[in-house]
Image 1 (cartoon, rainbow, N blue to C red):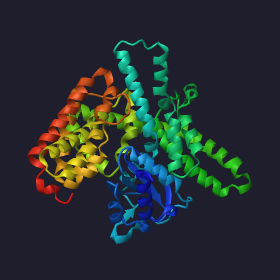
Image 2: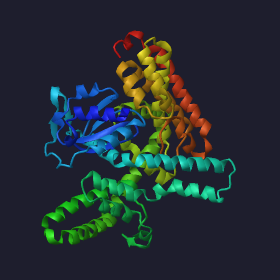
Image 3: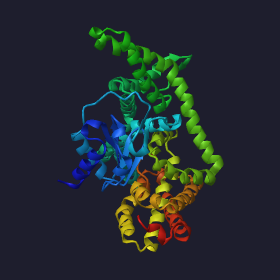
Image 4: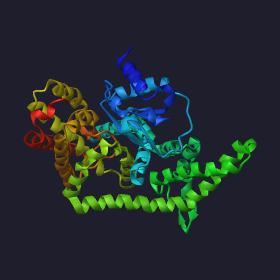
Length: 450
């Protein structure tokens, strides 16, 4: 039995068995479980499972198991996944030992969680496509003819997911809200259909994609709401015929007459606010944003920012926010290196040696949950190191033209060929995280019991 299968079996024992698992998803470092009965879970016991780095309680139970392993563990769990059961009506459910697995979150946090659930399945494709695009554009900047066949093929590979992103987001949105996924996909397709440019409403031609992915998510969500309402009054014998038909017609017209204009204003407001924040706040804004990003990662809400990056790319051609936030992982790498230099604790040194290579590549959860967060103060000095790098990135105005992981692997996606500028900020964060942690963040007694 391979290591990941052993880990999956141990997880099953702690979450109440296969029949208690309704859905299994994963991202780069986490396995996310939707449970039928959260009261069967003892969080403290789950944290002690060998191979589980950390457990995060939210609407889904998030198990941090590390990069690469998450996909394999999720695959084993999916093989044993029980039959889907109806979502419990209770909004707050209590686990054993007095620990709570609650869905009664603040509205803002819940929205971020749901947005994250929509985009998490798309992240591998976004990263792969972004890196292909970045590599191809890097080659073009170095003088390669973009008209040669192999270069054209690479550009097709890199741009395909972005061409159909609205459809994919619509599908995932409907799925997240327990509607019919294809209706959500159609909602996204409607808002980005090129034929819209021939339609005049409110005395102006429609703008294809107006409102961006914000509009797509709202339209797809509305599809699920209307679909449920229509199904209640349609006889079962003609449900398949009339429920999707009436839902599409109603939501389609609402999307064009109301959702696109409103979502357009929202999209413009978000992108304009970020531009103004960085323009007026400059390095201070960059420091605050980068310094506060690790706490967002800590609770698993960072994926909720993905549509903002994509909307910035869609509207202004790049995202200045992503290089700033990427400094959070760099500050943590610097902090881990300082701990490695200072500590004599072999277990802690081995933890850092295992986690720091992927930290350089922009995957920070192993360092976060295995090193800096358990030690306490190094988490704060890592945030300070991130703030210094974020201030630099905001000052020099670097931006990315695609979505990818942070760290060194974000380099090909930096706009306008400013790769060395971005790397300079990255090494500033490494250095600042190292210095802050070495001087103020770590004492050997902190490693006792880790």
